[in-house]
Image 1 (cartoon, helix red, strand yellow):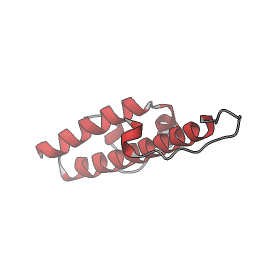
Image 2 (image 1 turned 90 degrees about the horizontal axis):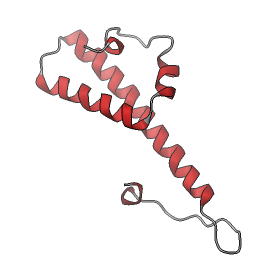
Image 3 (image 1 turned 90 degrees about the vertical axis):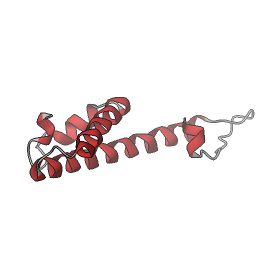
Length: 94
């Protein structure tokens, strides 16, 4: 099991570690956690730790997507130099 899932509470450096984690790496880890939990081989305590880690990873990914969406909004400009806000739907992010 991942060392991140060993404890029940957030480690002091966990937030800093999450900030350094790329979106892709966070999704990969989240997929591994889901796979472990779906197998049903974790103890109750391991399941709780995995759930907590997964929740943190999901929040990190959502925040990263929000940041990217805001950056895109700021970068889109009309020909006259004015900023044009284009709606981004889920399909537009893929």
